[in-house]
Amino acid sequence: MNTSAIDDRLRLAWLKQLQWEYDNICFQYRLTLQTPVFELTNSASILGSWNGNYRLISLSTRLIADSPWAVTIQVLKHEMAHQICREYFLVDDGSHGKSFQRACAMVGLRGGFCRASADCSGPSPQETMCVRPHTAQGRKVLARVEKLLALAASENEHEAALAMQRAQELLRRHNLQAPPSPRQDYEHRTLNTGRRRMPGHIRAICALLQDFFQVRVICSSTYDPLTDKRVRTVELLGRPENVAVAEHCYLFLTRKMEVLWQENRKRFRGGGLRARNSYFQGLLAGFREKLQSSAPEPEQRKTSGDRKSGSTELIVFPDPGLDIFVRSVFPRLHSRGGRTMRLHGDAYRQAKATGRSLVLHRVVADVSQGGGLLGSG
Image (cartoon, rainbow, N blue to C red; front, side, top):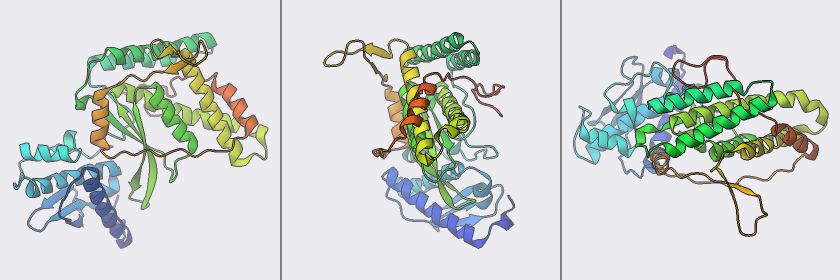
């Protein structure tokens, strides 16, 4: 983007947002730092810098305008790590040595942004369209899942359902056999909804992903610097192969739900948004039942006590390494209760029946070179 097109109003908004992000990082990671002065530069080569003599953090307007906001936050954390070195450790670690690496860990900074330079020419690791598992076994499992999801597009209903079930079995078995992972074996992916409010059906999809795909899902938000607005995001955290499949399921459902609603909306004339939202909730309830009924052992088990004979409950296997990773990325998580909604009975019931017949399959023709499920549509 041509930085000369950025007006003073937008520059002022960015400075205010950077101050907010700085304060939030300090709050999240329980840091007590002296508030710095923020400066915007037009540098194309220096993305950010820290001047300890003037307590000055400089960030490039080109970085902010041309990169996802997640990248700007990583660069901001990099400069904050320099400030931590000076104020906590009483050193100026311009060499990015041990003290600097320790400071990076204190703000949840990882990967290439812990070095003296970072390649920000492409999208951030959190916002790319595919994940490449770190291990050969993970890549092998993901490739097999891709083939099974391709078979799940079969017009033969039995063959399609069997392929989806086998994909679930494969992922479940892989997760059970995978050894405890160090922190770098997990991925954090941000899916931008483009919405200023999080719809109820998106929250329902998030719950489904967390229950069936061995990922942690967090509803959050990010800043859009070009519009000066915050938009809602879905954060996926987990092993790369699980994150890839969960992202695929998210995109499959959001696209399929809209297509099915457009095909059936005339049946519920006069129902308005309540009919639409009820239809979406019904689809997801039916699809949840589909996943639950086809879930392989040991994800289902017979329950005892006062439950009816033959009932099942979902078992989510613990992953201590993932728990640690989530806390490092979101150290101050809090939960919010969902709001109840009045359902449009006919829309919900018909959609639930449709949801029970949904089969998760690939939604794109080509597999990306990175080994993920998604590529250009």
